[in-house]
Length: 435
Image (cartoon, rainbow, N blue to C red; front, side, top):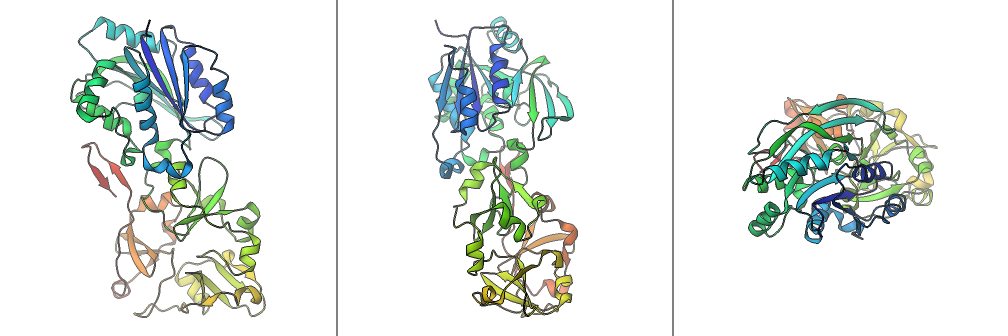
C-alpha cells in the first residue's frame, strides 16, 4: 500500500541540524509517510549522520553526486525536489530542509485537513522563525502567521510550511513539463516560483497554527545570496561552507593559506561567505603561497613597500604601480597598516605600471577596488572605469562605504561609467529585477 504522505527533505552540508530535521519526521503522530532524503553530495560528516537513519524502511536516500563546478548551473534544491516527486508515491506531498523541524502533529493536522476537504489541494501553516548565531544560540525569533486564503502565495509562505496533493503537482507538470523551476535565476526563491505555478490551479488554505520551526543561520541560503552580485569583483575575499578562504583574482579563485592570509595583511572581517554553487562557479587556479609570492606572483590590490628603498607600490594588473607619497594613500583611502614589506629582489620580478599620483587628471589610471562616490551614487573602480554599485551590495562585499573617495564633478567626468554591478532577484511580480 502506498504511503499517505511523501516528505521531501533537501540536504547539503549541515551536519549539526540534519539529524534533528529527520527526527522531527520520525517523531510525528502520523506514521503513514515516506521520507525522501535528497542530499546534494554533502561532506562525509553530513552523509554519515544521514546513513544512521536508513534502517527505517520508510526512508529513501538519494545522493546527487553533483560535481562542484556544475552546481551553479541549476537551482539545486529545486532539481532534487523534482527528482523526488517523480520517485515518490504519497497522495500528499510535503517539504523539509536540513535546518527546519516539524512539530509532532504537523503531518497529522495537514493530512486530516485535506482529507476533510477533498476540493482543497493546498494547505499551509504558520511558522516559528528563529535567528541563530554560528553556535545556534537564538538571537531573535518571530512567528510567521497565516494570512487567510492566498491566491498569490509567492513570497508569503515558506515551502516547509506547505502540503499539497499529488494531483495538483501533476497538473503543474502537464502545463510546465516540470514541477519546480530549477533555472539558476531562482536560487533565492524557487518556492515562490513554484507557488505561482500552483496558484494557477488553486489557492493556499490556512491552518492557523505554527507547525514547523525554521532556523535562520548565518549560512542560510537566503542570507548568503541576498545582495550578492552576479559577478563578484576581483579583490574580494570569499569562503563557502568550509573554512577555506579564497581571493577572487582575474575572475578566478585562489586559495589563501592561514599563514599567507596574515602575511599579506588581509582582514578576516572582510571575508564574505557565499553559497558553494557560486563559489565553485569561479575556477580554482594557483593558490597564493610563499613560493609564488617570492617569485613575484603577488595578489592584485595589495600595498607593498621595499625594505631597502622604502618605495611604496600598489599591485594592479600584475604590475607594481609606484605611489609617490603618503598624500596618495590618503587621497585614495589606502592604509599604511596594510603595507607588506618585501625585498627588492622580489619586487624587481614585477613589471612597472603607471605611477599613482595625488592629483586626478585626464591621465589618471584609477587604482582598482577603490570605492568612489559622486553625488549620491557609489562606484567601484575596475579596469580604470567607474562601475555604479548599490550601497547594500558594497556592504555585502565588505567594501565599506565610509572609506568612499569623493569625486568632484570635474574629476567624475574624466572617467568612463561602465556596467553597473548588480544583484538580480525575482520580485513579487515573478519578474527579474536588479539593484
